Image (cartoon, rainbow, N blue to C red; front, top):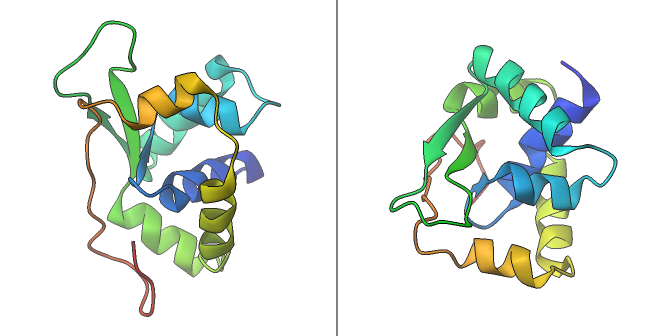
Length: 125
């Protein structure tokens, strides 16, 4: 798996909601275009690492798809020794200076929720 894909997985898990849209990932990864992020997410989806969750209800001007990490993806991250970085990334994500647009997406009523069942012992989300 590519480093950028590992980074995307970690960023999704590090966010309080456990889900991120392509636009939110693009905000966090200024070195990548939204098209590149979508390509990586499709590859991760093919490998059963992430899954798309629809916005409910959809709203014009807001993302209609958010991405969550699957239980398989959490296991992969743990087995790869990359889980330990999540707590630090979560603290950094909380401190991130967000644009108004990103704040609007984060408070969007249609944003899906995702609960992680398979977290490594000692972890919380």
